[in-house]
Image (cartoon, rainbow, N blue to C red; front, side, top):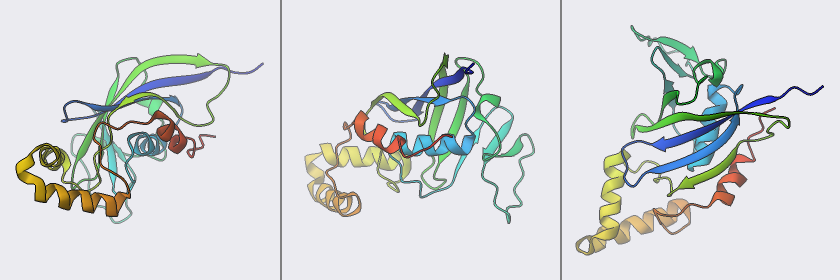
Length: 196
């Protein structure tokens, strides 16, 4: 007899940006936080160039560096490659904070929206919905991104707009559109993450 797999529906919301940038994904409950990091990277559209950490009420979860001497007086320091998300996300509405890139400090709220059982296991994560494009890497965090949006909308900043678009095209090889979201593109990236 085949065992049912527990699947989580998670909402990933980038904090501090309006209108919001978010993704809704399905993942097995037994993946590690390190695997969840990869899911977030691909679902949002980040490049995985920077460090990350998850934070719960009583723990900081990341990949420890052998030379780090950092400890937190009020929280446990845990290895994201060993800790499964079901240990901290176990009930609907549970949340963790995910921070990517400690220079730009992109904070994401990860919310467990739904828990379901499936007969067929997921072979890779699946995005079922989302809104808006991920900000460009190294743009300066929320404040830098808001400035980019202002540059795009303010005719008095035409020279800055041209410089930004030239940089963006050179770096990303694409046109910048903050409203763009393509679920097929996201799922194509997510399909590269093997969960078994």
